[in-house]
Image 1 (cartoon, rainbow over the protein chains, first blue to last red):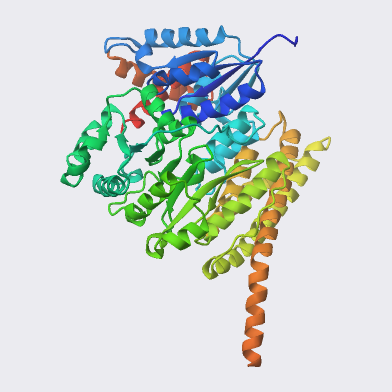
Image 2: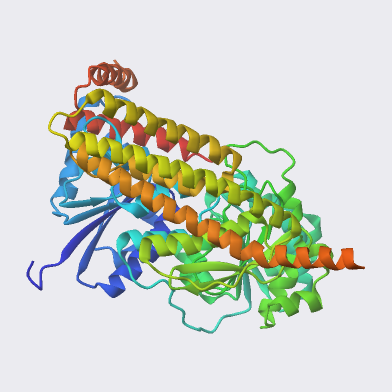
Length: 553
Length: 47
């Protein structure tokens, strides 16, 4: 390829607006590092159109997907719709993409990725036999872990950066002057993710009362207008009404962005505005509720604090019904207000701050997480020092393990502080690691037998079939083991997807790929086992010494 | 026939083709892209 010829890369992102913004952040980094790359974004019209003011800086072309363009009226026929899809594809193919990356992980995007012509493809696509195919490891990781478990230790922007091939995993940051304005976005896509109006009224009342110099701006989409009006009607806010401006449904996304660029603090849930705030680099207090996975969708910049419930059912699944919404009560408006006021007063918010200023009562059921950036991207550190549960400890383990597996990076983390309950769980998991290790050993043995038999001049099909049956039994036993040890799910699921997408065109090549998968799986489970030993060892030693001393007494 | 009925009919034909292990062609893929896009559009409605 000649030096001056641009590399044309297509990016499919046809999920929601927040994902488009996170894709923009990752693509912007790639463009900074590789200005010769010409990027084309393929996104849903309704989610990307309003973001043109940002997307145009990074993407040379933006192709909008809209069902209405394919089926404009009730009288449209299927043949016409197919033809319109054809013209739409032609428009993309005319760009002559060198590479196509599907960041969407949805069914429609997998068909679209198959239909678009490109020399290289990454991410989900469909084969001619209508089967899902994922060749690259990062996309296999997203499909097996991010989509199905709460144990993903990476922010989505970092995952997108890895898939796109960016090399820098810290966001840019520029200090800028900010006015006496506080922006509130009291909404989110689903009820489980957002506080009710009363909690927001309590917060707004306290903030307005304690910060008389500040003006307050409520932002949101036209669909959120009704809710914001209900909030504004509260009698409690009567005396502050002149300082509270309800902009919900009246401003464009660009106008909201400009407001975020000049305001002092944003308080919000996990939503599009949170990601917009990250791009505007506004200090942000995010309230994570319901199915929100704090690290995965934390606004990607330095100045954020994420208040996160500590209860066992958090984060839940979107489809799980929950009438009482207990995690909504865990985060108090008093704690939120104290943190916002500290940001306004430019106080250092760390463990000492919480010890000195915050009642333990408000910290009983929550952690306050702040970002820290490593060579693998964003981490969230518990600055309220509330102690890690087994799931959080495992997330740290996975960060270390996947960083080594995908990028051979050895991250240096301090050993997490664990509670007594976590200790017992972790010790129990060494047994789960043993089981998986042994199952993968059998996987290697049966794969070798298939490989050796297939290489013979006259291979015995019965023997090969028998071993394939045994491999399928191993998959079943791994599935049973992960039910007993759910924190091992990411490893089991990743290698299941990895094996299902084994490279090769014949049984010998596919078996070789499987053999490698089992071998790598064994190595990773060994890393988890060793990390558990390292974390629990000193605690167990202390317990043993204590019991010896007790006996002596 | 409405477009909905046309889509249902085309999907039934596609299922039959699939059960005969026949590979999908470009036209089938376009139909599957369109139907999955419509399905997801419904999912994007506020819950």
